[in-house]
Length: 283
Image (cartoon, rainbow, N blue to C red; front, side, top):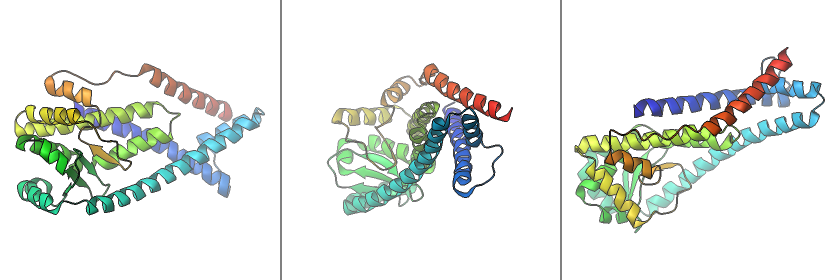
């Protein structure tokens, strides 16, 4: 069930975002290079506005398209820079002894993709788009017992194997950039929730009990959360904690978030407006 929800949320988000980005790129090529477009949504909307004498709104549409594309590029480049800077910083904080010890204990699970850093804050997250790694802190290892430690590693390993840092970044990026399509925010949140519950479930199945992942999560909550990291990552105890605890306590219960009817109505209204302008321009 959660696999289907995760897949549906991601595919829907990418489909909506991909269509809008493709239409915007074609329209930008029309603005800068004079491409002759006949079926581009933004071009037809612009033509309709100009035919109605609404030149100011036509210019606003141009600005929205260009600023959205610029924001996409800037956010992607910024994220790549933040990840690179974070990797250097984390390497400088490497606890070589603890990293070697964890490699001996969990090498069959993680390979060489686990790094322990020297930090009093209890940290556990997975980062990286291509070269993905699990990051743990010495503060976390001191806080958890052996089984809880293994539960956290299994949880993060599930994220690592399924490329969750990249997919999470993509859904979050499009939800942020296309703020005028509010359903994308709901899809991103729903996707994040599904991925966390799936990772919790994987750790529980491997250990034969929900107790260890649940107690690890509660310990991290009681210890206090550190500030969110600026680079793309998936953190063990940073997202959908209340839903996850409810799911761990009652695995049979469906804890999916309620459908945001106001958000869906807003997105549907904008879609109908665009389609109405498209129909008017074509006819």
